[in-house]
Each structure stands twice: as structure tokens, then as C-alpha cells.
Image (tube, rainbow, N blue to C red; front, side, top):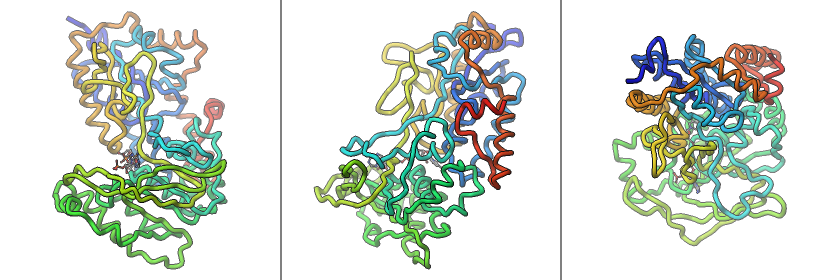
Length: 456
Ligand code: NAP
């Protein structure tokens, strides 16, 4: 019988990743009827993962969720250990010495590739790169984006694509008080982009964005939307999809798209154009992006399961920039099983497994568990499931030999790793808010790890 979870020997859980799924996992652990001690790791000195580095700067309300996470972080039985890369500074095997259970909640750090010729040409980017750049993620600050051409193409029609299109189309005035980095703001201020063309491989009824996000295009200060009436001629299966009460969100999307298609320019200088039923085939250009070749698609299959079939008819579209936005992928962690096409750590309802074994004491939560789907709140249910299964395993869990955060910190010190505590982060946070105030912005982030550490 295990004594893990008693006041004498609290259950020690490491959570790797301090984004939404990590914090929801911590919350779920604290709601258990046992005593739990959580140490949360992040490779960056700043916590909150996707909320800080993924949510668009002009969506400040969504970022308010960090206030809830802060409450968790300030608990006495919680320790934030930032600036530590699990898998490099400390291996999973080494961590098992200090923790009874480990929950991986590292999200989806990279992107899906289209797998077409020309994808790596200069001027062709992943949305992860652009989003990371304007949000101040240290991994993307050496990138340079050339906005000297007038036409940009965004491929994919999910909410990330909507973020990318909106940021490209907003005026400086619409962005200047947000927490977009000053460098991104100044670079975008020089942008010559007049048209952003967003291409979906399926139709307007199947688009992956949600109503709030598409509705924002009705409100842009200097941009109107163009959608050809031909896109509203639906096949029978799409009509049935719209009539299905389970598809209320898609019906709303369709209504908003119809509204957008009636927009007149009203003297606005920029144009957002939506194209449907077009798959990217090839990107062309001498040294840099000049054209994208698309193949026109037909939709085939039963309602709610329609797939695309290429028509063989292609058209070539001139542009100077391409952003692919066709989904995010998780990245592997040394020592853990990984499914590369879904970008997830293989698991059964949160228990890490491969075809041969269950990895005792190792769990996964959030996008690295189920793939990059759903909104921030979706991760709550996901983390609840993982923690529920962790609790079920408690009886058979192996107690770690060194149940001490001090011992863990001493181990990191021996490796010359400089961990960042939550109190440290609050200092960085205060410095960023101060820097923002000076610029009339909600925050000016440190975009390098060295900058964050220098605030301490
Ligand atoms: P997503 O919602 O899965 O959308 C991916 C898009 O890429 C879809 O339009 C998909 O079309 C298309 N696509 C996939 N493979 C393709 C290919 N080979 N060629 C052409 N198109 C392809 O992914 P996401 O936009 O990266 O968003 C990830 C998650 O974050 C989503 O759940 C999203 O809602 C969420 N998110 C939410 C917000 C917000 O709430 N404001 C903001 C950003 C992200 P098909 O439908 O045909 O597959």
C-alpha cells in the first residue's frame, strides 16, 4: 500500500510545460483528495506558453486567463522552475529520481508542412514562425520578414490563419497599444501589403475558424473583404451540413461569410480575399516566392465527412509572401514514444504508452496528448482526464527515491542551469509592464532569454 499523497509524504508531480494544459493539470491535482506537491518546468523563464506566445496581441481578453494560473502558481505547494529544458538540462530518467509522476504538457511547438515543391523558398513561412515573431518568442527573433510586396497568401482556414491575416491587415493604430513586440510593430508599419488572400482546400461550410474570429474582419479599420458569390453555391452534402443542428457554429460562420461578401470598399485601402476549394500544389519563384500554383477541388463524400478531390485544373497566383497555416505539431522528448504524423506523445487517455508497455508514472496532457485542436478551455477537460487516470494509478505508483525540490534544484545547479522561480518571473513581468507603459503599450516583452534574465 503506497503512502503517496499523505501529509507526511505528499505525491510529487512534475509538470513539464507551463501553458494552459500544464496549469489545468496542476489545478486538477490540487482538487484530488490527497496531498500533492507540484513542480512546473518551462524551458523559458516566462510561464504561460501558448497564452503568452500564441494568443494574438489584439486578443487581450483571452490572455486574462493567466490571472487564474497565477493563483495556482502562488500556492505554497507549487514551484515554478523556468529556464530549464527537460530532455536537455535534465532527462526524464533523471527527473524520475525526484518525482513520483511526470506530466508532459509541452503543447505543439512546430507546424505541419505542406510537402510541396518550393515550400522552403525565401518568403514562404510557417505561421508558427510569424506568430512567434510578433509575439516575442525568443526562438523566432532572428527571422526577418520582408513585407515589400503587395500580395500575401495564407494557406489554411483555421483560427491561426485568421490571426495571421488580421495582423497583416490591421493598421499600426489598431496594434500599437497591444503587447505586439515593438520590432514587429515597426516592421509591420513599413508593410506594403495591400491584399491578403486566404486559401482553403474545402468550402465555406467546412472552414475551421470560429464565428468570433471571422467576424473580426467586419470591423477592420482599413480593410474590406471580398468573397466571390460562386463560393456560396453549395453541393447537396454541404447544404445538409448547414441544416444539421450539430453544425450551429459552421452555420454561423456561413452567415458571417455571407455578410462579409456584401462588404463594399468604402474607401478602405486593404483587401482580404477568401478563396475556397483550392489546394496548394507548388510554390514558384527565382530565389524567392513569386507564385503559388493551386488545384481546384471538388468536395466528395457524405455530409460531415466531405473530402477533396482535385479537378486537374490549376491556376497560378502571383504573390510575394506565403504563410502556411495548416496545423501545429508537437515535438518529441528524448526517451518518450512519439507519433510523428500526429505530433503527439503516444498515450492512452493520458497514460504514456507504446505498442509494448505503459510507461509507469509518465503522463501527457493538452496538445502534445491529443494534437493541436480546440480552444484554451478544451485543455481543462483534457487535463482532468489525465489526472483522473494518474490518481487511479496511485496504488501502483513507484515512490521516487529523492522526494525533494531542494535536491532537484541542487542537481540543476550542479549542471550550471539557472532556474527561474515564480518570484523571479514576477520581476520580469513587472519590468515588461513598465517598458510597455513607456511606449503606451500594455506590455513590451523581453524577446531574448538574456533580456529576461537581466531583469532579475
Ligand atoms: P486548424 O483549426 O486545424 O486549421 C487548419 C486548417 O488547415 C484547416 O483549414 C485545414 O483544412 C487546413 N489544412 C490542413 N492540411 C492542409 C493541407 N495539406 N493543405 C491545405 N490546407 C490544409 O488549425 P490551426 O488554425 O492551426 O488552429 C489550431 C487550434 O488552435 C484550433 O483548435 C484553433 O481553433 C485554435 N486556435 C484558437 C484561437 C482562438 O480561439 N482565437 C486562435 C488560434 C488558434 P481542412 O479542414 O480541410 O483539414
